[in-house]
Length: 158
Image (cartoon, rainbow, N blue to C red; front, side, top):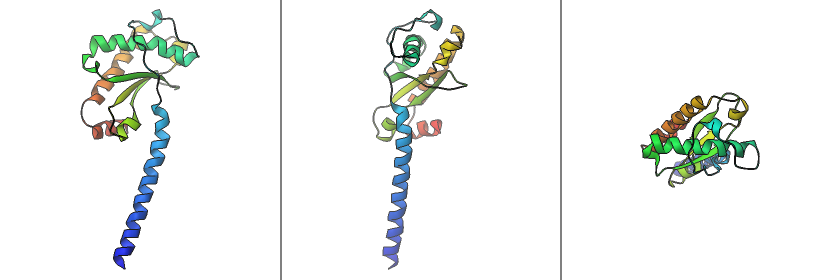
């Protein structure tokens, strides 16, 4: 009798854990959609005209993508074979942020990293030298995340 009761409690606990994990995965996976980064070089950002169509978010990706690629090639050769993408996000306080693909992390797939750019960067006319410095800072985060195991990446993101 106690064996049956214990197994029922264990099964219920497992189902709750699975439901909780699914909920977290579903909530966070929306952040994992991306747009590929542009592949041309250039810095500072004020010299770039947005080449993409489709709104301010695409314009900011088109303008910052080349800067990221140039800094990546010149200062972070260890990121040459890293899947790095640029996405847009909205924030009142931040111009950039670094993330990794949660779905690829959970399904043990090759990792993909994101540098997210806030379109307000161009509306607020941030200085181009400062923008390049922040991009380098974000790429340092990507370099740090790309080393080590997945558990270390998870601890960093929490």
